[in-house]
Length: 171
Image (cartoon, rainbow, N blue to C red; front, side, top):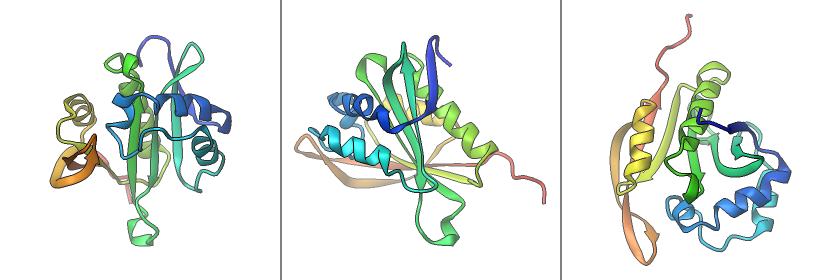
């Protein structure tokens, strides 16, 4: 982990810090979150986290500087082995180890404590920093979605990436 970065499970009272992260254009423009989300939206999301979802926050000096989560990939029991990953880091903390700390925590959780064999994500094709981070943790591009999402008035492409658990437990 980077110096001074603490990663822990998100608590409902973290909503203000998560909301603050998504006030940053560089954070929300890399996700499907719209600009101008209300504090109440984030308060409700953290207070009513779906069973089986895991939201983590990264803190520096007690302040939330990023968040990441693992979310059920679907309701079908045939997809119980897969989770979807999402992440956002405040601009001033990008490139300083926050994303690495969050990814390390999520992959350790998935590999060692959850019945997760496959982690999936989508990332915009022009987000080189995120692509490098995901590759560092074993994610590979499985396909490209053309005109995937509207961002700043333009449709942008995204990659589907996945990481299959490096080792399977013995039978």
